[in-house]
Image 1 (cartoon, rainbow, N blue to C red):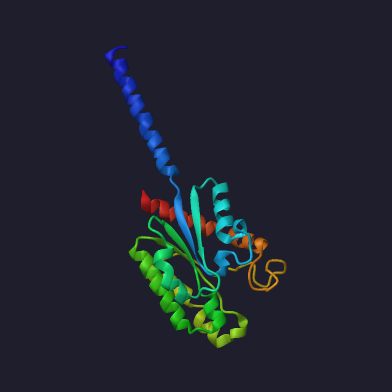
Image 2: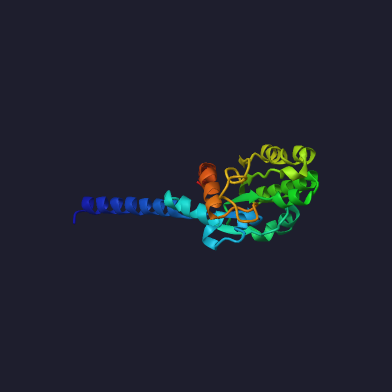
Length: 216
């Protein structure tokens, strides 16, 4: 083989190796954590029926290399979430879908306290360089209009303060819709979760795009 031919072969091999390295980088999984309460945990559902599992499957069906860890704890409040946010979100996490506050509203916890706890969680995640998609909750009607007026706006305020994307109502398309809840009339069944995944999917895809751009 001549010198020119050898040189050309070397250049081609280098280009192929560099290309394969780029492909490998693109194939690296993005690690998300779904951090929340029973709505995230998948109360009374099979593990494969939870929000995180169905969302991961939907994203992978679109060719996206994503793993989503379920860090939902049934019954958790924003106070409980704040107490475990550091160890429940491991190092190496690229993004968190943060959904908490439903149990605060059910228990009539002061909205000011819920907002303070969520604010602290967002601050801690930001300090660690972890991006957040905030999922909002609405106060149940039985808590009264005055409570709802104080509670419902906290998610929009926090999203604006921390410049994070907000999905306004995590249970959109499920609450009060027949056939979408368990017998308790509060938690989504597997079909309800599928609706939640379908409706949140565009925003989650956009969120992943932000994470991808930040890591390049």
